[in-house]
Length: 148
Image (tube, rainbow, N blue to C red):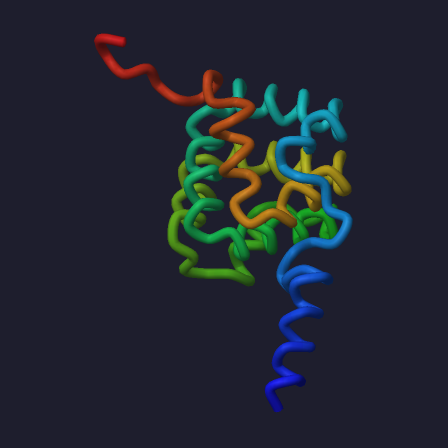
């Protein structure tokens, strides 16, 4: 039994953990690997800073749901945000996004559809959108603190 446990532990150590994305580029490489998508996402953040901030916050708290939204947006290209909300009622933070930031949400859905591979690769990292918001686009949406 002990040998079986040691063999299993060695296999995990060599192969990596099951939850790691095999062959997936790091978040730090995402923008360089998808420059057009990254540039357009940056323009979305500048155009819809409040919606972007809410999306970043939502992804930080609910990364699986954020990923589901991106995937749904890609695979349902003729459906708007109301179609998604009807299937997912009562989602914290997202309900506020849908209600108060509809133009920004619709624009984000369009970005996902124009850049499906980049969007999915970003969302394959739990909290990837949050990370991008805070590392790539922070100056475009975060309000400056008085006195700084």
